Length: 226
Length: 213
Image 1 (tube, one colour):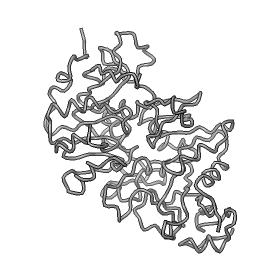
Image 2 (tube, rainbow over the protein chains, first blue to last red):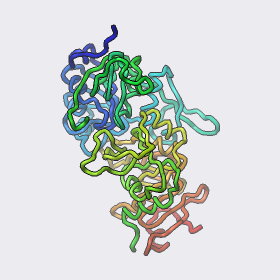
Image 3 (cartoon, rainbow over the protein chains, first blue to last red):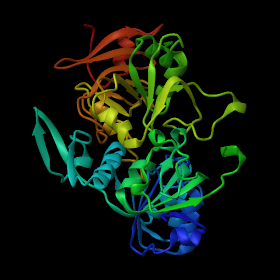
Image 4 (cartoon, chains in turn cyan, red):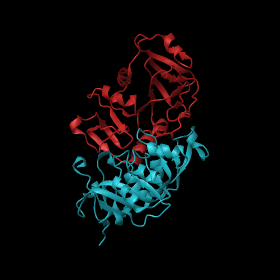
């Protein structure tokens, strides 16, 4: 019997190796698997390359992971925000490497990785410093820049519901990067607010088919998030 | 010199958005534009984090923590709205399905170049977000911004000095002093002056030649 539902955070985090590329879902705090990040902090893997839309807030979660010196590099579209104090300190001190990627390019690089597409062309960033050093080609009279797929070892995602086959649904704007990241990693770990019996999620409403998911961990977010 | 305040700038842009357009509003002043589109004029707001049909801010006791806009502020969803993931959201943007994007800017140049994501003085990390995708992908890009910096520095310029977001993308600029069209091969053309503002004043505040027609 297939059962991707794990019973403990330790089980969820098992086998994450030093040097891994880790995708972290969420747009700001919404849809960000904060409990899985705590689990990763506890698990101890270091020298990580993290991929996230933002670079952490305050001194918890992803910010804490960076503050502990566990993150070698962050791939990010919008690192600077009102609360990104840890990232800014580390960046100014040269203690963390930053790869800035336009948000849509970041999403498409991961989608491409999940879809077996090694590279693609986009008009985004043409004529800007972010296109420097990249191959460019013209199609139908317009210049495009080549971007490569962004594959990862681990994806930490947040979903609304999950079942034992790893099928996932998402809630409102909590979806964002999660489905795309779920496709792009060798090992996708999902924290879910609700565990459903197999068949309980209406098939037409499965947002991420379980083929992309390895582990599902139930995390109760509490009444505010119900 | 009178001019528009921020709310009036936002309201002025809203006047020019017709029903049926799919519109993405950047963070800052652009987000305020949504407040000035009458609800019965069905303009469909797109939010880069995966929302179509974004509605206004909820009442304080009706906040849904799962539902935020690109600026991470709580919003609502209108009937007919939908949710989708980031690759689909940016497919809408990059694939040319968004009728209008309105962004803020540090500088807009006479050839339509826009710089709004990094300045050389900024020692903390640059942040680009979806701006480059929006600049390259939206059918139309308008800018709403203060006409000058706090110390009177030029934001309407011949050529941008800050790193570009997208070359040649801007077709209209709304400021506290008026509305400028950006015309290919010509440059800035004054479309409207804000109340109490003269052409001489708006020209004096600009670092590029403004045309009257």
